[in-house]
Structures are given as structure tokens and as C-alpha cells.
Image (cartoon, rainbow, N blue to C red):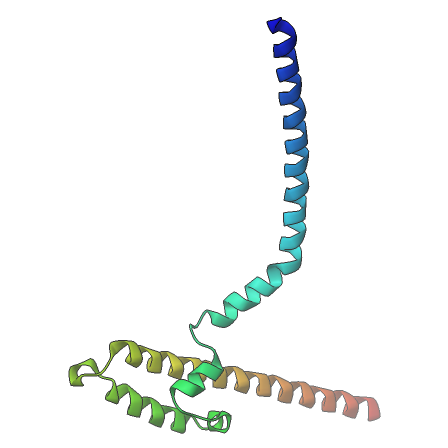
Length: 137
């Protein structure tokens, strides 16, 4: 009597393993597809927040407007003001002082990126003008 019962249990175990292995393979393939589609978005999000702060947040921390990004002197002025006010030796907060420092770093990177972008656009425009002049002449 134990022979048929054992055989039935083995059959159930084999069938279960077969079903679970197919499900696992299908789930793995689906995970790969999702990773291919969504991987770029995750990478963008990670690179954007790598500096620790978004430019909009940095503007708020230093109490600046977007128009103030044209002048790095204004950014440094606000940085010096808030950095010295939050000095721990004067009863300030190291955390807030760090936020102010990171905000300045973030805005400096934003200005540098904007200048590089403007320089690239300018060089592309000059190159297009040269090509047009060569075609005409």
C-alpha cells in the first residue's frame, strides 16, 4: 500500500517542481524586460540626485530666484551670509551649514553646465555659418 502512495507523492513533487520552474523562468524574463525598459529612468534619477540637491531646492535654501543664477557673485553673497549665520561655534547648526554648502555646490554646477551648454550652442552656430559660407562661396 505504501508503494502507490509514495509514487503519487513523487509525481506531485515532480509536477510542482515543473510548474514552479516554468513560473520562475517566465518571471525572470519579465524582470529582464522591465529592467531594459526602466533602467534608463532609474539611471537618470540617480544621476540627478547624486549631488544631493536639485537646483530648485538649492535656490530655496539660499533664498534666491532663478534670475540670480546669472550672477555667481549673488550666490556667493547669500552663501557667505547663511554659512556664517549657521556656524556651530556661534550656536548655529552644522546640518544647516552643510545644506547651505551643498546648495552653493549645486548652483555652481548648474551655472557651469549652463555655460557649457551655451558654449556648445554657440560653436554649433558658428560651424553652421562657416558651412553656409563655404556652400555660397
